Length: 153
Image 1: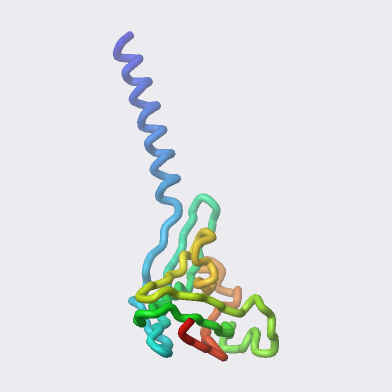
Image 2 (image 1 turned 180 degrees about the vertical axis):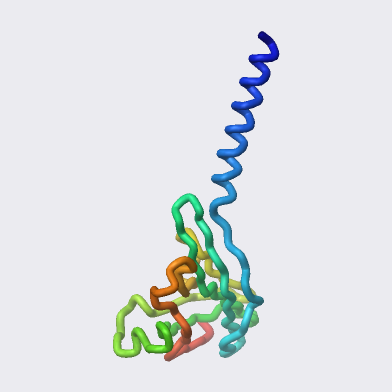
């Protein structure tokens, strides 16, 4: 009787451990590149890296450009720019002035802002690149900041 109870408890423990382990490992990012600087203006450095995001529970397999903005100054800076995207080497938003593509930030002295692929914090410093499991869907092959201004506050 004790052996049967022990075996039942052991099976329950292993089952719960497997479920919890599968849930905690379903979402993660894989850094694919080191930070690459794409612009430096008035002591503010703009860089990016490519990361993969996998959520096996929800069938999401995506790749993102994660942006980092670093203020090397000892004073706060205001940043304003227009994000322009190319899908499969064709400009997607060259002819639009939508606010959706505007970056408007204040970054404190010596601070750094880094995008986060999933979640609300820093989401606008993340650019969706492509679906890893849908090769026929167009991907972002290039991005740049146009009309970039970086000024002290």
